[in-house]
Length: 489
Image 1 (cartoon, one colour):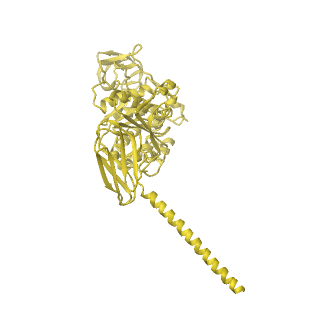
Image 2 (cartoon, one colour):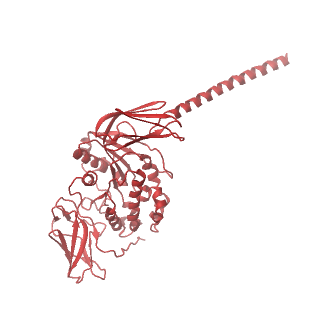
Image 3 (cartoon, rainbow, N blue to C red):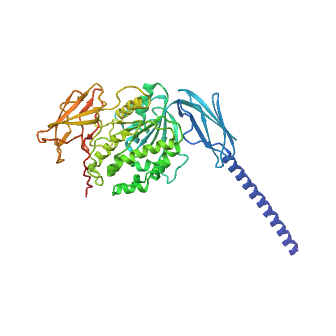
């Protein structure tokens, strides 16, 4: 009986093993089918979603993923575009340009169908930089009132979540929301006020995409391709902040900008520079390289790039930051205006020397909006404060000429302040300055043969030179003499 029992047990065990094998195999098949099903689904990047704004009057790239060789069709109204995915499962179609309006519905079909509703056609802007761009609505002047009235269904907000990456990513985390008192409190104040200004003056939908991170230098936002193309961008001051910035170069571009490309945009606004005061001499080349890099990668030509000049603050409070580094960053920002389709919002009058994060973001957004109306939309208006153009020696005096004077130059609240003058000995002294017509005359009894003038040349200067449109002048110097930068012990 034992052999029979053993035989029976063996048969039972074999059947049990067979049953387990079938169940295991079946489970594996189901998992494979499920995985295949997920992979087969057409997928979209986060930037292409319900509630989005698409750029008016431009060809519109729509892209995503699906199975290799899968046919994908994108339809909007009576416009249809069809393509087949490549070997990596990637696809891209381009819809014809459309006029402002909406709401519209976008349908994307492959082995599955995605329907995106409540889409508007209007103006789309990237809003990037460090903490002053990231600064939330809930922390601005008059925040309670501003938030309670932020009910603008035709303004859409997209917030990119923080992400570092050593390689360029193809997607990011974020989503589109209608602008309401509930969606706006944690959103970028500068981006919101800029978008609100444009919406009011253009009377079209506006989408603002906030991709910003406090305390970040420009190196982290610069595309890898620019460092490869221009090796001198890698050269920075021998300083702890500089070394840290270069060891993490491009990580925010890779994680928070690259995944937005090739979404159609009108342009970009930028508020950053504070974290580069440790390498002010290098900032002009770096900043210009970053702008050029973004434009190259987007392949939308020299799109408008509007930025904010950093405000007055005692930068020596951070002992690792060098003396005069702030001045060199401001100067670099001023000289970056040499790039095509750029403009700069000056904030020397609306800063806070006791706070690196001024609460008046309303005027920042408005000044960027003025610049957009001129640079992006071709309006003939005064959009900048006075910008130094040239000088001429006149005996014991120097005569200064400016661009962007509007209907004239203005000294607010009394005689002109924060002017300095020097002779060939390069020793600057406080100077007397007065407006004569559309020029400014500068002189000092201490300097018989003046060679150079500097204006608002200090971290904390609050100058009073404006134009008649109430826009402040940018700090400047007429010389190119070396500027001492000393790091505190």
